[in-house]
Amino acid sequence: MDFSEDIFLNKLAQTTGAPYLISIERAEGIYLYSPEGKRYTDLISGIGVSNIGHRHPKVIHAIKEQLDKHLHVMVYGEFIQATPNRLAKKLTDLLPPQLNCCYFVNSGTEANEAALKLAKRYTGRTEIISCRKSYHGSTHGSMSVSGNEIKKAAFRPLLPDVRFINFNMPEDLLHITEKTACVIMETVQGDAGVRVPSRDYMKAVRQRCDETGALLILDEIQCGMGRTGTLFAFEQFGIVPDILTLAKALGGGLPIGTFISSKEIMHVLTHDPMLGHITTFGGNPVCCASALATLEVLEEENLVAQVESKGRLLESLLKHPSIKEIRRIGLMFAIDFDSEERVARIVEQAKQLGIICYWFLSHPNSFRIAPPLTITEQQIRESCESILKAIDNA
Ligand SMILES: Cc1ncc(COP(=O)(O)O)c(C=O)c1O
Image 1 (cartoon, rainbow, N blue to C red):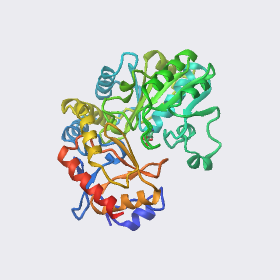
Image 2 (cartoon, helix red, strand yellow):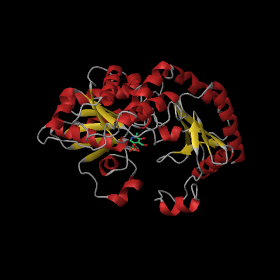
Image 3 (spheres, rainbow, N blue to C red):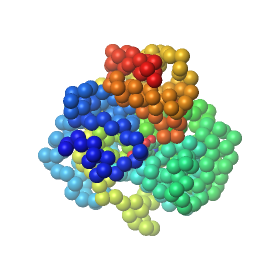
């Protein structure tokens, strides 16, 4: 019963007609194991989550320590608790001085929802500008600012006053005006198939927001936490957002998100109305313990500094005549083929060979590779051999 496909398909709500359908009993490092002991190499980190691998011993230790103290004790923002305090201190120490105040929530989409509310409340404006092909989450507000119309149409009406510009196209920035509350963008677009903007473009975005008084929200829910070769992707573009959103890899395997801004901006959530954003479980101490340990592991194991060379090695090994294009930043890859069908066959073949790779929501001609940053050179070589075999077999 534990791994019954029938229960999974009928008693658990499904999101597609063709789920991946492998059974996983345990996970360790970059590997997942089925109940029969088949080993899978996780080359997508559970979609951007397991940047320090699965069940990192330091994370497990920190979670157990917190379990022995307390679990949930009060809704967000009322009691002083040591672990959320320590996490907020650690994160803000790692960030530029203007990003000095964290609000912890439960997921990426909630972080973006709250960031949009914060920008509207702070500026007193209503217009939101986002980018075509972006993905910011699946709740109503985040969906409203996501670019994929096919995914949105059935759920309209969505948020009013949202305008879309093309990502990495400086001409479009003139659409940002004094009416704009905020611009929300992924620093590196993930589900559009890894789109890396130019440094000049990101500087122009920052400048246009400054000229018009619009707040800049950078969504690093997928590209943050070391994935691109710096702890935060925006560090590579010479700008600082007004609001940063993080989730996924922040929690080291437990659910947590955050939006981070200045104390001055964040203060508006306390009045007119008070409780401008509320959440019961945001800042859950066990999730915060896991996130704090994750940040410490990234630092202590010097993982971020190794990302670029590991990414370069992986890219150099992925040579195949069927590959049309590889887009990469750090250890975040999109690998393009001539058709969606071929990608589906490759993903299936890779699964047979014990390799987990996956497609993108808005770019089905590519598959993604975004392994744990802890992957070793040897593991990269072994994985690439299998991927090339999967491409041959597909
Ligand atoms: C860039 C980006 N923003 C937001 C989200 C939504 O995060 P969550 O699934 O935790 O709500 C995702 C999830 O894939 C994402 O990639």
